[in-house]
Image (cartoon, rainbow, N blue to C red):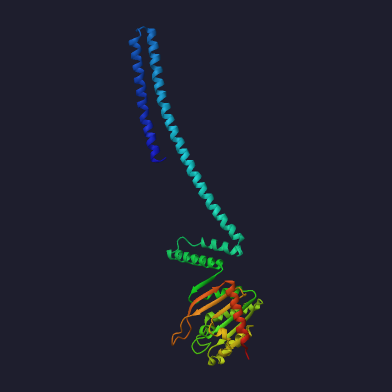
Length: 327
């Protein structure tokens, strides 16, 4: 019982003697009046006492009934307030349940694998409450980043990553089903004095990328790559070794000399990879600093707009037809 309830209980207990005293006083007054008005015979004395007791009892009962009515009204108000609180809590609970049901309904209707989405939610709730606060902030940041990434994918425009990405390229290669058409520019994939010296194909990312491509070929994926040379001296034995290695694992390789680049494409070359002719993975290199060994990537972009993807398909077709086979 709360403090208000205790106060009402004490007030009620304190008020009872007062009511009894008032009833006795009224009864005594009635007895006095009946004695003054009536004769003091024994028969009338009995009636005086009876009337006095009756009047006193009526006064006491009237007071008690009044208090009972007040207390009943307070109880009714309390019950109404309690009922409103319960109703509000039930509404809030059902609203939460409805929202969760709606979200899981969207999950069920999604084109994505339902189990993966459910696992994401389940695993996000399994972070130990005793973990350092940094763990929670880091997890929240990753969830927010993934949420924004999925939103941008759903919008069907493009997704931009500041700097050099490695996860997108590897994940796309692991999940591609039909084809990969890629260009390899010296401004992006070569480093130092050639494709091997500090370039992509000698890096950890390049090796993992080749492993993923080997697995994709075993799944039946058709892979083509055009190496675009803007410097004749890059076609050395190291470069040819990279080409032969990729050809050995099943990649169709061609080489495009700078002199053979189609005129319309010569001034607008950039590095891109087409996955299943549906997503174009593109990188934008930063300005090359003199003395830098490896090229620096400014941004990585996933292009999803159909018109842009069709442009990349035509662009690759032009470059592929202009390139020569590896000797």
